[in-house]
Length: 218
Image 1 (tube, helix red, strand yellow):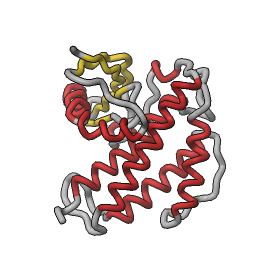
Image 2: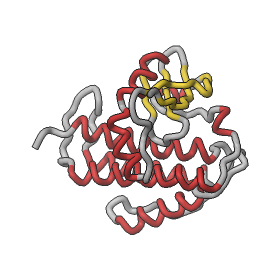
Image 3: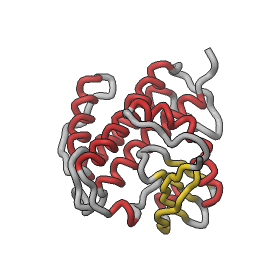
Image 4: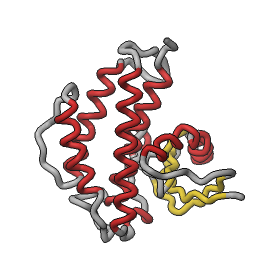
């Protein structure tokens, strides 16, 4: 039996992103819209453990993508970031759905932490990863999350990426915001709750998979 996954697409003439609307973090980019949709399907197997960590299960069997929204991209898209809020992400969200999505964001962080902890410091160089090694990627993800706090209406001191307690305190505050029901309007200035969950989880998983792809076999 075929299962349907709702997808939002963000595209420019240079780059596109396809994101599973109901599964924060399951989002892939490519040079074209069609390639991004294909990459999204190809990454279902890699996303499935994250969904399981979040207490959910991806649809079993063949998947059919339902394009629920399309958005014109901008310079952020070209840079490699899914930066536009889609129309479906401006709709109300009740408390159970908000909690479900927040649990998937937490799962994305846990997945990132586990992969980073198991990876060597020196990562393979090349087109997939550029020059950053593991600790610099960890720093980047943690400090990006601190920057995202502003979009959630939070004002917090920067955490120490080497101090798990300070990182967990920041994440807990972010999850508390994401667990709240939403009327679909921006939380603070730009990001709606649905987009915030998608963007935060995407960033953690994109770098988790980068670390995996660039780790030399032990």
